Length: 459
Ligand code: ARG
Image (cartoon, rainbow, N blue to C red; front, side, top):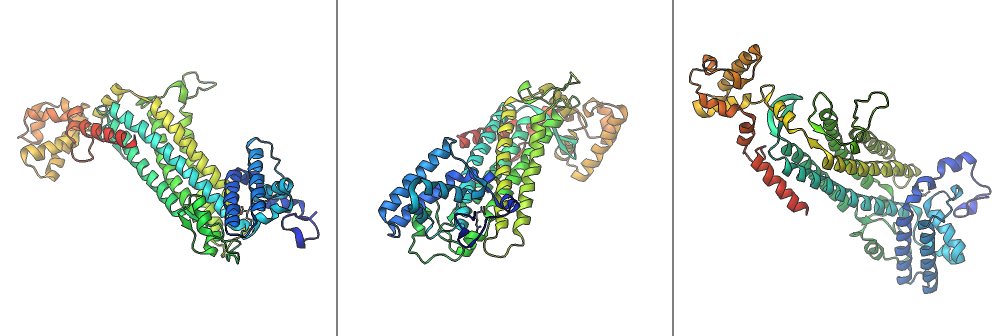
């Protein structure tokens, strides 16, 4: 049997394998709510513009609503021979309201229909990702406030660099997430033009009102060029790019949690709620959730790369290649949503081991920069020379296997005779972090103020 929707000039139906490769219903059925919303806006406009008689409009509207109910109730039977969500809905509509259903497709095409559906789905998803990222920010800011004065080692090259506070480290991710949210909102603002009414590619001769459908669907305006409307998926690409960057941020934090929860570091503890045991090694607590957040960045970045490759050689306007935008986009944005939720759970759950962190913060000559700064400030040495003197003292301490603060004053004075015992005050970790009061620095007072500011702004 030829296709009921487009099979007028076809004598027979598609080959089995053609049907299999062509059908998208297996994954685009999740666009049903968007598809029906789009159709309701379209048919209302057709009625208002006098293109369809009021009784047909009423019948179609009632029919679309019952199709929606059937889908919501799980009573709808999706059939592969109907290819995609657009034809599935229309076919069922025809069964319910009869031939008038055929008028719904006046002045539109599946090309503008699918672009509209996808934009609606991506827009809703960006909104909920933004909310989820805000939840994670809130959890991080609250942890930051609680641990504004908890010292830990700050690293560069994963080598102990200078002491920082745990709260400061948390707030670094709050800032990253703020930019991620900015990218979600930018993508949303740019995608918010309605393709509906571009029809197949050239527009239509019917006197449609594209401004009406655009505003009924919450778009800012209709798209201005019919070819562009049906030919681009940059809104999906941009959203996937924003999602990829956010996923990379989460992945880096997840990596830190993996390292920090290891027995060797023992910086933080995750409860039973976010770890798993080993079936063979009873001592283990594996940070699986963090590992999976780290890993899921792979499929999110993969979806972006995949769609870029799909799009890069396509001539205008629509090509069926573009049907491949869906699975990757759905999967990636859903994966990011899961990662945000898991990260939020872990942040609320984690407990830093303050003692271990403090000990680690003081090891590895992490206050060497404070010593150099003291030499500059108190003795007026040029920083390069102070760096050199400090280097000698670190060498002396490390040869003895002791910390800088364990060198005697006379040992210090061998490197620089003017050093006094006032220097010991800056060699403590707490003094070190408290002195970092420059804007954006790690001093507990700064961290407290920043965390409070975020908590207020996030509401
Ligand atoms: N299922 C198709 C897609 O997702 C809908 C558009 C089909 N358009 C067409 N001209 N065959 O892209």
